Amino acid sequence: MNTAGIVTTAVGNSLRSKIRTTLTVLAIFIGAFTLTVTSAIGTGVSEYIDSQIGAFGAKDVLSVTKSSEEAAGADDGPAEYDPDAAVVGPDFTQFETEALTEADLDTIRAVDGIVDVSAVQQVNPRYVEFDGNGKYVLDVNATANLTTPDLAAGEQLDNTGEEPQILLVTPYVDALGFADEEAAVGRTIQIGVVDHVGEMHEVNATVAGVQNESLLASGAALNQALLDELYATQNIGQPETASEGSILATARFSPDSTEKQIDDIQAALEREGFTAATVADQIGIIQTVVDGIIAVLNAFAVIALIAAGFGIVNTLLMSVQERTREIGLMKAMGMGGGRIYALFSAEAVFLGFLGSLLGAAAAIGVGTAANGMLSASFLADLEGLQVLRFEVLPVASILAIVMGIAFLAGTLPARRAARQNPIDALRYE
Image 1 (tube, helix red, strand yellow):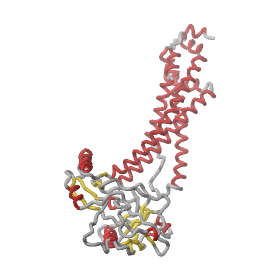
Image 2 (tube, rainbow, N blue to C red; image 1 turned 90 degrees about the vertical axis):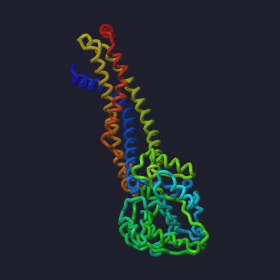
Image 3 (cartoon, rainbow, N blue to C red; image 1 turned 30 degrees about the vertical axis):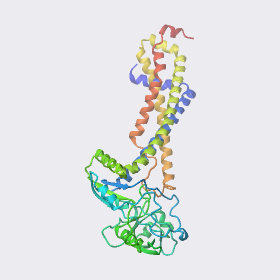
Image 4 (cartoon, rainbow, N blue to C red; image 1 turned 30 degrees about the horizontal axis):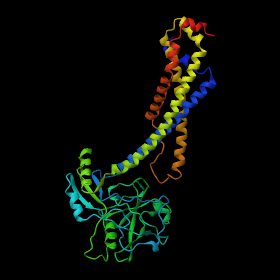
């Protein structure tokens, strides 16, 4: 019996007991389906995170603080502004970190490998308003000047011009009363900011564009002209003896620095009492969490496949027992143990292939439908995020893995069949 004959016979033998084969294939189906879905989630989220990292225009920058920054964000869009809850003065006490002094900047600058240090102007606007449609708390992305935002409409900020400009985040469009993102571009909005003695001022800014929500779009982006105006306004009335400071500084290193050199710079800054992180470090935390979740889900899928493997063992052992006389007849007709081993191994691989193929196909179908529903609902603002991304290589790898598990599961029954004594097998009742 040649290879083609072995495969054909194996397929036919696998379909003899339809109920038993169906139950075995179903177990493999569940494991393959789960593994394909979790793999697609990992691929989709990882590619989205990589695209977010790629949005940064400055890979040679460290964000330096005296301690970890307090993370804050709103899931339900901008909060309405409450004037009674407003804090008088610039109010840097909302942050857990201490302000960096000139001495701190000099210390950072003296670290080997750092070529330039500059304090990030920390502004604390209280609200944003357009055409009397209500005031809303304005969240500002302090490191927005390091990014190239993904725009839903408009243009990138002009950091060389004198016109104050802002990039809103999509949730502010409806809140401020704009019909859509395009309608917001070019309009003038008012930003409320409190000076050092508690008086409220309004600064006008032009909406240069609207950026899609993303992992990095944690607030509105301001160009340098608007930052300067807000910074000057909030410091009105500040005594000359008062010290100005920022909780965040950007430290530049050579773009040619290796990972080891960057690690050495971060270690040196840590010894001096600072926390320094690259963009990849910050996003890497998210990636680590995602990888951990995917690993747990994959573990469940592997457990299901192992259980399916025992099902294959059971199915083929029963098949060997039922076909004992048939095996003896094949051996009596000159079929060697190796070919009988190959025949039963092929049956196991076929079961694995059938279950994994059906599982992967179902996962792709369900995942494609889920992507459409997610992108049209609560993930609509995260442009470019495809939660489940199916690619040929990962899916093919899953098929190969499942078939490999099936082959290993079929080893014991195949060996038992190959070792049958033809005389004893022919006498088997």
